[in-house]
Length: 296
Image (cartoon, rainbow, N blue to C red; front, top):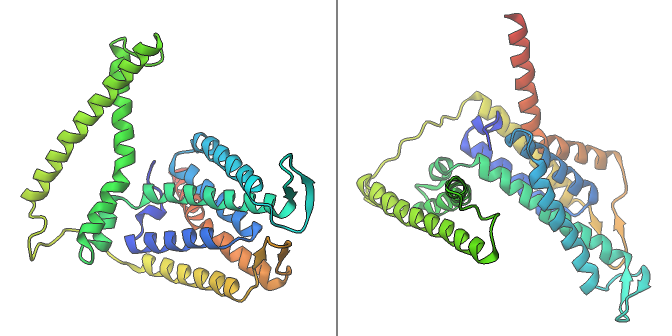
C-alpha cells in the first residue's frame, strides 16, 4: 500500500473519516447505500494499492458469494416464495436479497478496514490514543502492523527457500510439508527475536514511566479545518437522512423502502461524495501535478 493525499491529513481527520464510512457501511441497509460504500471503498483501495486492487477483489467476491448463498439455506422468512427446497423449506426472495445485503455489508467492512490499515499507521494510533489509553493504543498499533509485516517476512523466507531449491510448490507431499514447516520455523524465530528487540527498545525509551513525553509531527492547520467541516456536514446530513427514515429499507416480511424523493437523492449524492472524498482529492492533486509539469 502507498500513501495518498488523504493520508497526509491530521490523524484525527483520518480517524473521523473511517468512523463515518465504516459506521454507515455497517448500519445503512439500503441497496444504493451499500453499492456506494462498496464501490467508493474499492476505488480508494485501488488508489492505495497503485491499481492492483483486482487481486483483493477476487477473494472478496468469493466471500461475497459464499455469504449470499448461506442465508437462503438457513433462513426461510419472507412472504414471496419462489420454490421449495428438497428439505421442504421455502426459498423466498426476501431471504436471497437479505443474503446479498449481509454479503455486501461484510465486503464493505473488509474493503474499508483494509484502507484503514494502510492509512492509520501505528504512529497515528499512538498519537491519538497514547495519552488516553496507552496500553490499548499500543496493542492496536502492533495489531495493525502484524499482518503486513509478517506477510512480508513469509514472502522473504519463501524466496530464500526457493533460491536454495526448497520451493514449496515442487516435490512430493511430504517434501512440501517439510519445506513449509521450515518457512514457518524461520518466521516464528524471527518473530520471537523481533519481540525481544521491541521490548528492549520500549524499555530504553522509557515506556510506562510517569511523565514520559512523546514526539509527534502532526499539526492541525487550515486545510484540516476545512476537511473537518466537510466531514461533519456530510456525516450529519447522511445521519439525519437515516434517522428520519428518508433512506430506510427493510427485507422482512416484504421488501419495502423509502420513496425516491429529492431529499433521498440529495442524501445519496452527499454519501457518494463522502465515500469518494479521498479519491477526489487524489485526482485533484494528480491534475495539479500534471498541469505544473506541462508548464515546465
